[in-house]
Amino acid sequence: MSNPSRAPRQDIHSEITNKLIAAIEADPGKPSMPWRRSSAPLFSPNNAFTGKAYNGINIVSLWIAAEVQGFSTPVWATYRQWSQLGAQVRKGEKSSLVVFYKEYEAEPKPDVADDDGKRRVARASYVFNASQVDGYELPDAPAPLGPIERLDAVDRFITATGARIEHGGDRAFYRPSTDHSQMPDENLFSGTDTMTRTEGYYATIVHELTHWTAAPKRLGRQLGKRFGDAAYAAEELIAEIASAFLCSELGITQDIRTDHAQYLAQWLKLMKDDNRAIFTAAAKASEAVAYLKRSQLTA
Image (cartoon, rainbow, N blue to C red; front, top):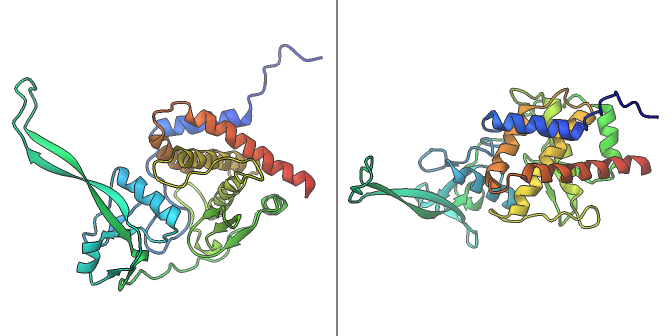
């Protein structure tokens, strides 16, 4: 017989989701990668010619372009700018869209007190990644930091999923065409201000394992393929929430890391027209975690 005086135990996934929402609403700041990349963090694309960082929606646009096309450096420039740098965009390479604003003067509106007559109009510009050009010397690869501390129980969990995981390069992604997850070399993991090297490594690998569950022969979630695709943004939400769930359940981290909230905040901005997005993503994340845990029973 149940004890009516005992309060029901809150579902751990709901608790973690609520903590993530609270962290996002507290303005956690920009995310950072827990491993070293060839030149700069993926979240800080910059222009090769001017040296200036892109901002606003262009950060997200170029971030996705780099992910989808497999670019390992966040250095970009227009065709003309690359030419001025002595580099040549390779024939057949496709550009990525960025937006800039031109300012012009107009007659102030008499009924608007603070109208100074300045107007801004959006203009499209097309840029190419450094990986798409010849004649530009990429920065040297970062020095290895040595192997991470292994978590035996988590390694057993990962192995039991049966997922194909390869290591190499400085990118993390799941590739549907080959049904495998790619991880950066573990020697590159450096951690962040709030996440150790070990935590960063395992948080990344369970994120990619969540993408692995999306395959048609598994849970059959739809994966987006282009910028502006709501399915792409939703899948990233799902993967990062599932990562937070698994980090807690597997003992990878002791508490909710701001890193998770920082990453999620980027995608929630893209889905701001859906105030239930994180709750829907959390439900899908729970399904993914359950699928990964079921694999332990058949291993």
